[in-house]
Every structure is written in structure tokens, then in C-alpha cells.
Length: 120
Image 1 (cartoon, rainbow, N blue to C red):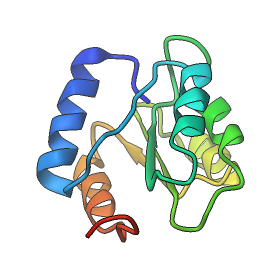
Image 2: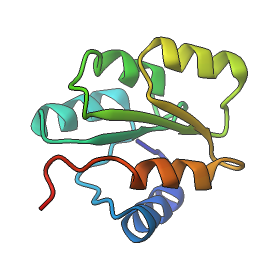
Image 3: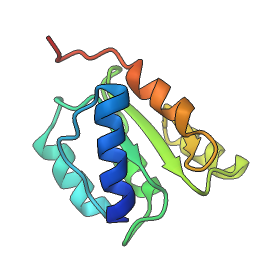
Image 4: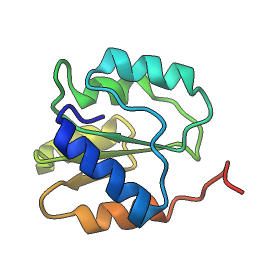
């Protein structure tokens, strides 16, 4: 989930190259995210969520995906990863919260480490 096309395109390319991750859907608001998650029900392994979207927030998306299967991970990637926001995200079952400007390598490492249930 990323509403900036420039950032989204760069993130998709980076995830493919550095984390061996295939992006199957993206959304710019919680309604479209819920629709994509419904379409891919049980077949997604990672959702990357920005906190500020074209409409709504990433917190709305986190609320929609709980509960989920243990192999399905939710990472928040935002420029607004304050201590309070991290706490709120973890309370809503985020598996990781990363600052876009200072923790991108850590984010990519965590993405690459995800056990790919459906690969092979």
C-alpha cells in the first residue's frame, strides 16, 4: 500500500531485485486494499503498508487484516514511524514497523527472510 506512484514503482522494483518478492497487488486506500486481500485470500505472504494513503490510513488496513494466518506478515513502511505510531501498529498486529528514510535496509532484510510458503 503506497499512494505515491514514484515510491511504489521504486519499491516494487527493489523488492523484486533485493528480496526476491513478487508484488501481486497494490492499493492507494483501505477499500482497494481490502478488495485485493479478498481476491488473494490466503494466498498472500506479505503486505507492506504506508500509514498515510490517498484516503484513509494504514491503521485502517491493519485493523482489516487481523486476524490472519501465521505465515502472513504485515510490515508498515512509513516516514512517520514515531514511537507512538510504532506502538499503535504493533497493537494492531503489525509484524514490523520501519522508517522509510532510515530503516529501508532492515525492511528489505526482513522481507527477504520471509519463508515463502507458496514458492517452489
